[in-house]
Image (tube, rainbow, N blue to C red; front, side):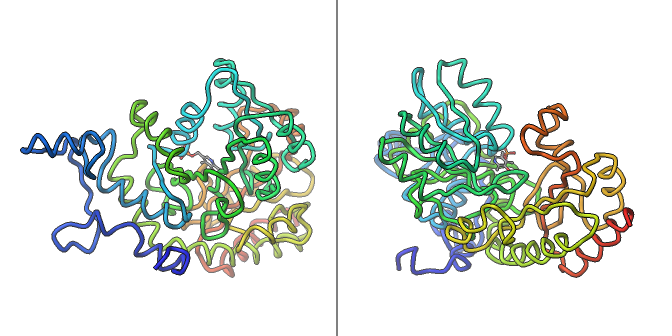
Amino acid sequence: MSSQEISKATQCIWAGEESSLIQGATQVPVVHSVGFGYKDVDEWMQVASGEKPGHIYGRNTNPTVDAFENKIRQLEDAEAATSAATGMGIISSMLYALLSPGKRVVSVKDTYGGTNVLFNEFLPKFNIDVSLCNTTDHDEIESEIAKGCDLVYLESPTNPTTKVMDIARLSAAAKRIGATVVVDNTFATPINQQPLSLGADLVLHSATKFLGGHADALGGVICGEKQLIEKIYHYREINGATLHPMAAYLILRGMKTLALRIDRQNQNAIKIAHFLEGHKAVEQVFYPGLESHSGHAIAKQQMCGFGGMLSFMIKGNNFNDVRKFVPRLRYAHAAANLGAVETTIGPPVTTSHVECTAEERAAAGIPESLIRYSTGIEDSNDLIADLDQALNVFA
Ligand SMILES: *Cc1c(COP(=O)(O)O)cnc(C)c1O
């Protein structure tokens, strides 16, 4: 059966594990061994040279990590996958593996904060030119691509105002000039969006977020054509940002319920977005599933669900109101992570945009009273009641 014929929910459970199971175990073992021994020196040689499958040294490959990579590879319907210790580990490995002095990147202003630091601070040191466009200005992005570039880096929906980019349109523009297209699919997950089917060459995740889903393990992964993945793997095995087998196990275990969790988070988030949109203390709600959202039409085209991430602005745009509101919520961790089974809130002022001044945040379109809300899998009625009582501090 080809992976396309099997539903994502079934793939979440079964895909990718078989070759890592041993001695009848029904669960993937956590293989902590750093080395993999061979008494037969010829066989050792064959594995070391890549002629025969197997493992040599834990910084390079590991059976538990393999199972995780295989599962996400099948969910993204990709030829190959490789992982790293964190999302940033895979993003930086990809950039350093594929780029060299004189190359040019086209991306947008609203990428994840860490990615933005690579674009603004580190790549220019290597004489790599990075053009960051206004995230929803597709004409501007297309014209920057048409000037010539090597890599187009997209992220949709974005953090924290859930901006949406047309992946098919921008991938087509990149194809016309032979550039490689990379999409950070962390917010959507393969359950809601499959960038490779929209024309992207590579799709990556911070597995720390929705893939793992329990906020207890860091990880990153990238999927795509074998020849590109091999280049990225080759750099990652040398830079040493290897995914730990225990983290791989936790993420793999979390992924068994990915389809269930995302389905619930999709449902919860749309109900909460509608509730917030109707609340008198709320100025604006940013959620791609709302008809009022500027990227709703594109999101409807390219996503099968709108995801668990939303943000909203308290009326008056005063950070003091965030101070009052946050401690009143009973069912939300106030923390920097997202994508977990528990609802988590993080005001951009203290999370993604903590290093910016108020003026810089305003220029980036981030209101001071914005609250990022990562919807968990709790009962939506309880979450709405909780938000309601917390917002009533402004009544
Ligand atoms: C968290 C995040 C990252 C970085 O992942 P880490 O695992 O924290 O290194 C990258 N992209 C997006 C969209 C994220 O939310």
